[in-house]
Length: 321
Image (cartoon, one colour):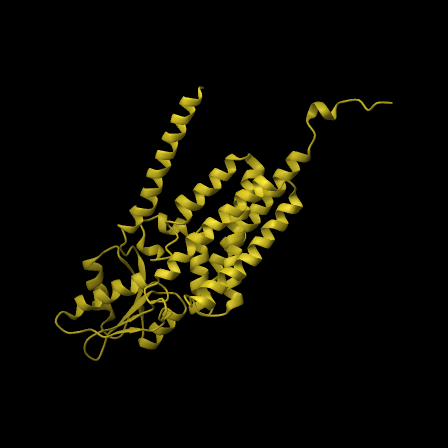
């Protein structure tokens, strides 16, 4: 293959990558809609309201019937539902938790006005987003830097560091220091996310470490192609389908659910659970981040073992007397 043909091939490959990235980022954004979105309906007219919702949008909501407004607030705090419609005593009341998803809160607020018609339906934000980031724009913007820095760290450690111990040390340093510095920016300086600084720093550290470890581990196992594979996984699937600016149930399926199995989506969900909901719903995303981190380390160790094993012809060479 001549240099010109190789250059043309690289240009075509880059064009394909550009198209895939445009689709991955733009397609979910223009197809946001409720898809089995968990909500609750409480009060004496719960069955009637639920039937109306199912008739309007058969596949939009996953409805749970509760006894009263207190039970609905508890379900919101436990991250079991995104919102609730409380009936009884006149016009229905809508409860939302913008901390779980400002996008969902906006959609449920619009839905409430449809129910009320000419009458204004009261909407209560039970668990609100941080007042410095009411629409969640800053929160959503945190995910991509964590992913990009993790990829960059993984690439640099792969290309510049050759030993297993040194790479592990670099990963640990990046994770710990990066997590502390990131939380200092989005928690202390920008005040995007409330809660414990150390807890949020730990989440940022684990997310960054998981991304970087995946890149390093794949590269150690399958060569430099692993860098590209890891980067594509994080950038084409993990980041656009993380639902950091919306909710998994608003994205086309199964991509919304799939996105929660990658570090960006798991980190966003874990951070919301920790910052706003006292850890409710944190077990699954924490397990996902730990799985990626451990898998990256395991792949790195496997790659190191393969490089240490002598070639079969070398192993059969006689030892000189």
